[in-house]
Image (tube, rainbow, N blue to C red; front, side, top):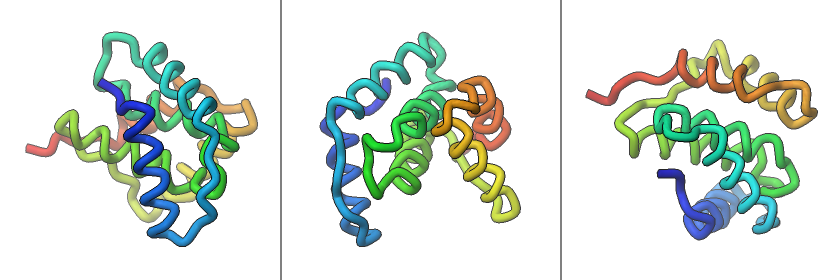
Length: 125
């Protein structure tokens, strides 16, 4: 099950304070993102981290200055709740950033994000 709006808002506020970012957010857009993520993942819980990352990345203004940090950390944390480690090797950081920028510009697809995330998920045990 994807995180609730309250959890995402709390995480956003915590992470923007921790990273000294301006804490501006649009709860309506965050709610829209969570709805889209649920639709994209459907009954496939293993797709939820990718759906969350995609849906929040496509709505850059939803998270204000937290756009770069918050979706990735939420996706990682959600993967962990599902029993997986979602990681990004140092050498692939630019690839992930580029993919998320393509998504934000409506040139990247959920299928691309899902494939990237699937290649970077490992069971915790």
